[in-house]
Each structure stands twice: as structure tokens, then as C-alpha cells.
Length: 469
Ligand code: ADP
Ligand code: MG
Image (cartoon, rainbow, N blue to C red; front, top):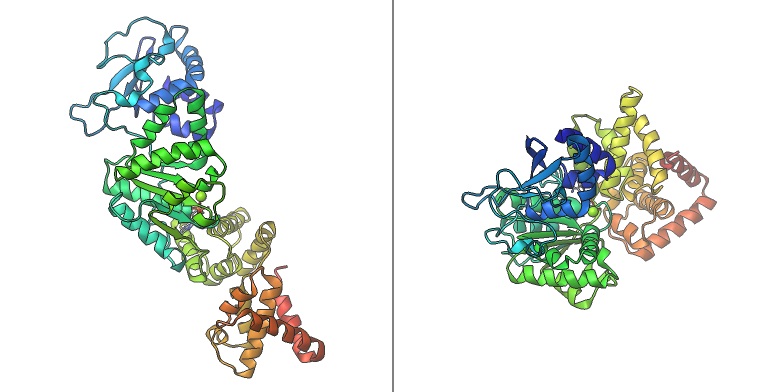
């Protein structure tokens, strides 16, 4: 019967909501018209009653007939001795008394004592759904120079939550660089190390929406209490709090309470705290109390390692040149690298073709067009080095040998022309030159191409090779 109810519910609410609020429910027994379901926490029960009562009523009546009723069993904290689930009946189900009066008082929404369920004696801890994504683990997170500090700080926090100087731990960086992944990994690791700790992952957006709902329902105290009960609170994308003063206020109080009680706070943001605007000074300064660690765009080796890890995870094999091509061509962020790999796999299996370099080129081309059509400096360097048959290390060195200088200048020229990188960044990739040197190189190449036919032909050749047609 419950299965049938679930089916209807699933069709009527967003998938994420269904996963969060209905997947964890366990049907216990069906006793005549009364269906007993087990929910993980009191909060959970309240949430269902507040948000889904109408829908639940409908499906229960549909499946169990007009007298159908729902009864909840609430799981108490695992560590409480003799923890028996207690039961509440669905408040909307009329006044008929319950058959086997369950342990503890039947609680009814609307009665005062349920306004703050967190003061129920004996209910010291709650069993919340941590909301962690199990695939975002440390094992699946590739370490590289780009993320070493953030990763190791996160790992330290997971060993000793609330007990390190990294409180809060703020992880920041651009889109697709792994903030959400790393934040989840820390949460998962804490859960592994300390199964009894209450860990909650929530996006700032969800936090804000919950808070707005709580205000509307006059339950903002419950909201605050709920968050103050966490041992570990992970809030993703705090830049979303910008300009939302009330949410910032409530978060400020939660933050203080948790911090004072030695609870761990983990935050992520898309920029460094100094660059986040629209956040109150007092909150911003607290965000900086612990450690702010940034995630950089992954360097080539890390991109290759990520691709290899992904391939391995998916049980597929790609030739080294395909992997390198992918890693060379897509340098912006990890999400795009994954996206490209996935489309490539899909393409190949759809057309039953082997994943050759050519296929990869065609595919990446389309893929890159849809995002940022940009080759990387590294790719340009590789093509130039292949063309002139020199080692990439030598190109990047400080050597002043004529042919090398020329190749280096050409690489700089194409980097300037084909990427959005700054002159300084291009210089840094070409043996630590400054921006003036890069500018000079570009001018030299332009001048030479106008006067030297042979040189001009090099450029034309290279342009063809570099063009992602
Ligand atoms: P952000 O939250 O910074 O926008 P995400 O954490 O959502 O980025 O990461 C985007 C994708 O890239 C995810 O699928 C994530 O698993 C993957 N990813 C990011 N960094 C790494 C890494 N170092 N190793 C493996 N996968 C990563
Ligand atoms: Mg994210």
C-alpha cells in the first residue's frame, strides 16, 4: 500500500523533495485503516505534516479508503538506551483514539508543546538526514597542487571536528572546482569517524528558503534550535546570503552558538571573503576566524588524474592521447572536464564507435563551442613544441638559444591570440617572463610574419594545427 502511495507522491512533488522526505520513510505495518510509517526524527515528522499534509491525506484516502489514517513512529537517537520509537498519529485524521496507545504522548501539531519539539525530555539528539552525497568522498577527490591546502585542512577537520584551529573552515573558489565535493567529503569522513555526530549539509539557498518558510509558519525558533543542535554544519555557497539581512542575522546566531560550543562549521563560497559583497561585517569577520582555503583551477597533471579516475570509476579505457587531448583542451574547471568525458563516452557508445583521437576532437570541438571556445596555453605549447620538435621543458626554461626563443615567442603570440589569459599569466607559463616580455614577443611575431615568408608559413601551419575546426 505504501508503495502505491509513494508512486502518487513521487509524481506530485519535485524529485529532490521526494528523495529527502519520502525515501527515508519505512512502512511499519498496516492495521485495518491505519498505516504506520517510521520516520527518522521528530523534525522530519513535523516537516511532513507542515508541508505535505494535504498530499498525504489525499493519497491515504485514495489507497486506504475514506477512514484511512496515518500513524508515525519516530526513531529516537540511536544511543539512547532502550530507545523505542514513539508514535504520533496524523493530526488530520480525526479524533478516534489509537488502538495500542504508543509509547510517549501522542503529539499533535497545533498543540503548544510541539511548537518546539527539541525540548522534549530525552530527545537530546536527533537523527537527521545529513544530506551528504556519498559519491563526493575523499577517495573520489583527486589531490593536486590546486587543492592541496583545502584538502588537507578538510582532512584534519574530519579527524577532529571542532577541535582544530580551522573553525570555521571556509573553502572558496570558482564554479566547478570542487567546493561542494570537498565539503561533502569532509562530512562523509566525519560520519565515518564519528557515527554519532550530527552532520548536516545544506546549501545556503535551501537554508534561506527554510528560514523564510519558518517565519511564515511562525516556527523560526524551531528553525534556529534545529540548526543549533548540529555537531557539524556545512553550508554551501554562502555568497548566496548577500543582501539577505535576516538570513544573515539568523545564521550569525546559529554560528555563534555552534562555535561557542566547539561545534564544527564548514562553509564554501565562490570567492574569497574579502570579495564577497553584501554580507554584514560581523558575519564576514567570523567567516575569517578559522581558515580560508582556496581551490584553484586544476593544473594539467591533476586534470589527467581526474580523467583517469573517472574512467576507472566508469570501467572504461581511453588511450593516453585522448585523455591528454581532453585534459589539454578543457582547462577551465572540473565540471566541464567531466561533462566532456561523459559526452564522449555517450557519443562513442551511441554510434558504436571506438573513442579515437579524431572522435574526441570532433566532440570536444562541439563541446567547447558551447562553453568557452578556448584552447589552453599548455595545448598551444605542446603543438608548437611538436611542430619545431623541441621539448616542452626547454620551451618553458630560460634558455636564450635562438630557435627556442623563437618558438617561445610564437607560443606566446598564439596564447595571447587564442586564450583569454593575461599577459602576465602567459609569461608565467613560458619560463617566468613578465608581461612586457610577452607583449614584445607578440609584436616581434607580428612584424616577422609581415617580412619573413618562411616564418609566415610556420604561423599558417601552426594556426591550422591549433584551430579546433
Ligand atoms: P563547485 O561546488 O566548486 O562548483 P563541484 O564540487 O560541484 O564544484 O565539482 C564539480 C564536479 O567536479 C563534481 O562532479 C566533482 O566531483 C568534480 N570534481 C571537482 N574537483 C575534483 C577533484 N579534485 N577530484 C575529482 N573530482 C572533482
Ligand atoms: Mg557547488
